[in-house]
Length: 311
Length: 269
Image 1 (tube, rainbow over the protein chains, first blue to last red):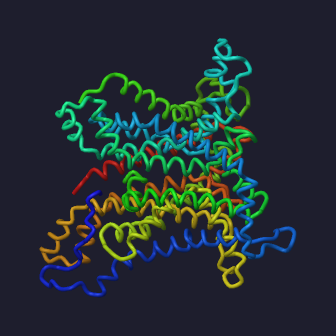
Image 2 (image 1 turned 180 degrees about the horizontal axis):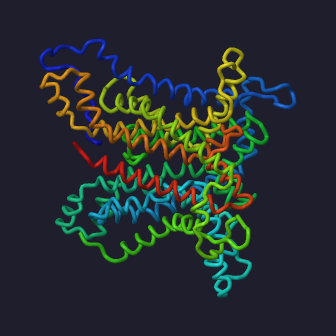
Image 3 (image 1 turned 180 degrees about the vertical axis):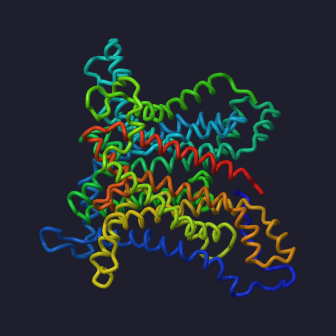
C-alpha cells in the first residue's frame, strides 16, 4: 500500500498499438468515479451545506411561522455559551478515554504484531471481537456488569465488605468513561496494530546488533515508526468519543449529559434545528481541523488506509 | 524474538476484558429467569434453551430485526458496486481530482456519526419542504434509512477495494494484454477476479455497518424501528433474553463471514 506508484501507466493501451492515451481513455476514471462521487455529493456534502444554512436561520417552528434564513451568526455564539459545560465535559471525557485506550491497547497491539507468530490472525480476531456485537447490546452488557447489585461483581464485593455498601459506579462519569473506552477500543487498537505490523522486524534486530537494549530499540526504533498509527488511533477514538451519546444515555445520568445528547435533544425533541445545526457544525469543524492536520502529515490516502486498518 | 512473561499475561488479560461482554451476552441468552419474567436480570438463574429455541416471540422485536436485515441487504446491493467503482478509480488511475476525492472519503469516514445523522435529517427535511422537489422526497422510514446507510457505507467499500487494487500485481494485467486480450477481456478475466476478495470484504463491511448502526438511524428512522433502535428503546424497561439470542446469532454470522473473507483475502492469485 505504501508503495502505490503516483504515476500509473495507462492500463488499457495494448503493446501492439502504443500511442498517446486517447481522450476517451482519459475519461475512464471519471466514469468510474461518477456514481460514487454524485452520491457522496448529494448525501454527504450537500447535507453539510444545508446544515450550515440551517445553522444561520432564526425564528421558531411553533412560534414565528417557521425558520427564516437571516445570517444569524449569533446562533454560534449562543450554541457555544449555552453549551459550554457540555462541550467541556465531552472533551474531557473523550480525552481521558483516548489516553486510557492508547495506554491499554498499545502493549496488546505491540505484542500481537511482534510476537503473535502463527496465532496473529486469531489474536487479531479476538481483539476485534467486540466489533461483532451490536453497539447498543455491548453497552447494555456494561450496565449489567457495573450494576450496583450485580451478584458476581460489585454486589459480591460489597457483601464481602471490600467495598462500602453505598458504593456505586453506574450513573457516574466513570461508568460513562469506562463504557466509551470499551466501545471504541477496536478503533484505538486497529490503527496501532496496522502501524506496528508494518514495521520491518529487521530494524529491531539491527538495533540490537548495534548493542541497543530491548527498551532502547523500542524507544528509538519501534515507537517513532508507530507514531502514524498512534495519531490515527487518537483521531479515530477522540472524534467519535466526543460525539458519543449512547454510553452517557445508558450508563450515565443527568450529570453526565454530553454534547451528543444535546444535539440529539435539540434536533429530535426540541425541534430547535438552527441551534442543533450550529452545534453539529462546531463539532464538524473541530473534526475537520484534526483530520486535516493528520492528512497533511500522512497524505489523505494513507490516512484513510491507516484509519480503516487497510481492511 | 522472545518476550518476557509480563507482556503475554497482560495481553491475555486485555483480551479477556475485550471479550467478556461478548461472553456475557451469549451466556445470558441461556438465563432461566424465574416465574414469568421476560426481562433480563443481573443474576444468572440456571440454563434454559427456551430463548434460543424461540427467539422471535416479540412481534415488534421480530419486525425490527427483519427490517434491519432487509436494509443491510439493500445497503450491500447499492453500496458495493458504487463503492467498488470508486475504489477502482482511486486505486489504479491518476487523475486531477484524485487527492480531493480521497480527502472527501477520509472525511466521510472520520466525521462523528452524530454529525452525519443530523445533516442527513436536515437534507430530508429540506427535500420535503422544497417547492419543486417535495413530490420526489422520501418519507422518513425505511427509504431514508436505506439512503443513509448506503451513504455511510460507500466510503468504507471504496477504501477496502482501493487497498486491494493498489496491492494488485499489475504485471498480470500486462501479461493478459501481451497475449492480445482486449482491455475489456483483461478486466473481466484478470482484474475483476483479483480484486473480488476486496469487493467481498467491502460488501461484508457494508452489511455489518448497516446492521449495527444506531446513531445515524436514530435521526432518520421515522417510525420504522431497526433492531438496534428497538433494543435501545427497550433498555429503559429491561431487555428480554431474546435480544441476547438474536445478538448471539448476529455475532456468530458476523464471525463466520469475517473468517470466510479472511480466507478469500489470503488467496493471492
